[in-house]
Image (cartoon, rainbow, N blue to C red; front, side):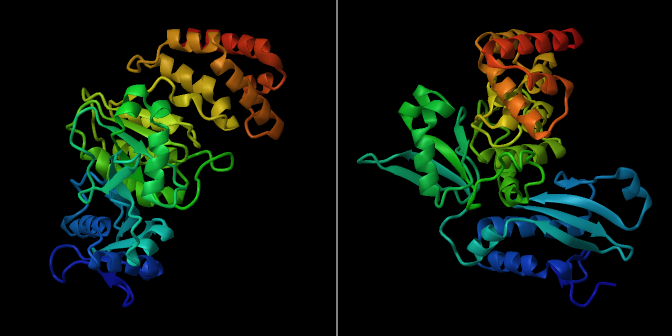
Length: 382
């Protein structure tokens, strides 16, 4: 039987009862209040959670961590991804479902409860008159339906969507190309975390819980574009956290973009690009050849050789051994990787044999020599 303090979110006596447990009461009440005020993503999140009353099986947003345990035990655990939320759900012996944890950003839900104008989600951006920039919120949560649309997943540190749009507009040439910069038309995904995510201390994107409130929303937007073609998804700075988590959510759901030529890019990412690369490959997306170059972050630099070698070995990736060799030849990858490896070895963060060896390398010539040697060894394996 449910505890008296658990919050029932489904109609009584209609399907499987779904509850918020008392330990997440504050988050649950904030979400319910936002739904009451008809905040788009809160309404969508609650719609998905209430849909669990028809059962867990057959829903593509339900992830079962341990299928054997799920089948053999009455006390079962699953993870449910809904727009803006990662929810832990337990099926109890009485047949009811309990939402026992919500991974979300408190800043986000407090802001929507107070009707903040800085809504997370998709914005359509274009140039206005007198050198102004217009950012229009897309209430339906979808990107513009044109094929070949460019989407910038903005840095998480901007105070407003207008500021995020302004910064993205200024960087269009670097993120995409001069033609896109000249046109000045793109979609923006805005995540009002209020601070930068990732970096040296938080290089792995998965544990950064501040991103999940927004990555679920982005995943929803990406999935709804799967019938469009030639879409480019590009993160800016710590937007790499949100983009990576969104791609991982969709890969978990087995969403496919095969033959749609969606492309993933990262401009100066603050987190490891490898998880994004893996998720994108799994879904049949294309990946920009410069994805793993990082932004001078020593951890991104140190893992560069390994990431790109993995890509070159993958016959379905358009990044080839020739690209790998060219990156080494022009010194870009070799210098970055050696510099990152030296810093890494000094701080004892990684103990990989080739990185420890790199710690003894000094100068561009030594870095290139190391890179060629690593390339040669990996090429033989691939």
